[in-house]
Amino acid sequence: MADEQAIKQVSSRLVYENSWMRVREDEVERLDGSRGIYGVIEKRDFALVIPAENDGFHMVEEFRYPIGRRSWNFPQGGFPKGMDGDPEELARHELAEETGFRAGTLTRLGYLYGSHGSSTQGFHIFLATDLEPGEANREIEEQDMRQGFISRAEFKRYVRDGVITDDSSVAAYTLLILHEGH
Image (tube, rainbow, N blue to C red; front, side):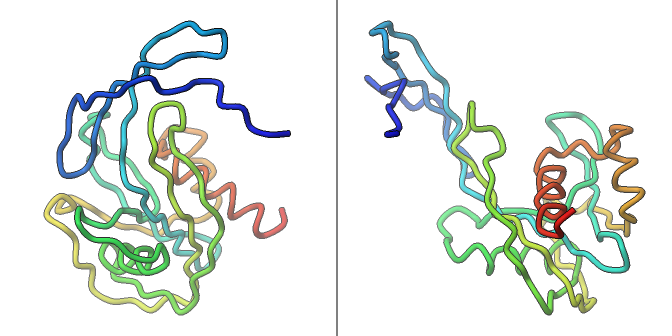
């Protein structure tokens, strides 16, 4: 069955733009001909890496300004504005930058959208194994970042208890479980 476009763009205007994102407001027409508006956040894709060993994960924790609290997540990030490249290259860069680890083996687990109802941003998920330690080289925005090892049992408990609330990390864990055949 062909994918019929249920909502068509009639016009678009840029509402806001900075180095990380653009926000636009589109006038749209629905299947029945009625019109409305739709707000869209345009952000570049990012890579997320699950650094796994010894039945657990190396994770990072930092203060997340929009939610006003610290949060644990898998290492993740995007290319700076004006730069582009391969998602695997980005994943290796983010892993080394945030944790210092280098992956001997990097396995692609999939691609997901984080908030497909409001944003164009998606993310590539990779499993990093055969880890070699090194020095982290974090960006200025990551100066409060901490890292730690979290066992699988702790990871599950942290998700249930609301300690880990990053949707991308929880979704990536689901792809890992599917990859492992559980």
